[in-house]
Length: 117
Image 1 (cartoon, helix red, strand yellow):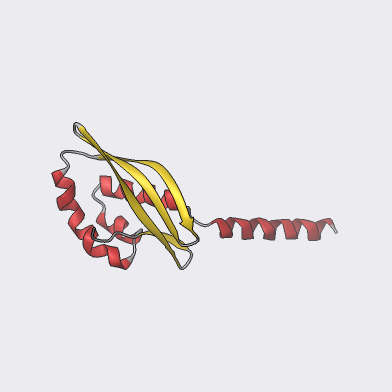
Image 2: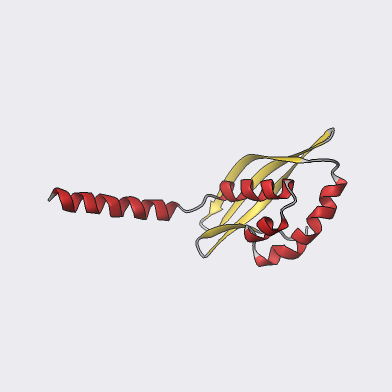
């Protein structure tokens, strides 16, 4: 009897861990770290295919921010099961700006979704 309970507990734990998946804030932090380090490949892996063209322009935009901009996550709002918004701050030289990253959930994974404004 105890053996069955242990097996059920292990299965339930595995299902719970799988159900949680990656959080949108975790993906946003990894994306912003990649942006900080100029790692376009990682940014593309963490984003939707529709975002890849704009991601190709980010190095040019980053150059306009000055030397070594830093990014920090301020807040995360999960709008619904497939949409989330992560507010972040850009710290560059003597200025600070806030912006939002939109994330969408596709095939069970949160991905950054950047569109032209």
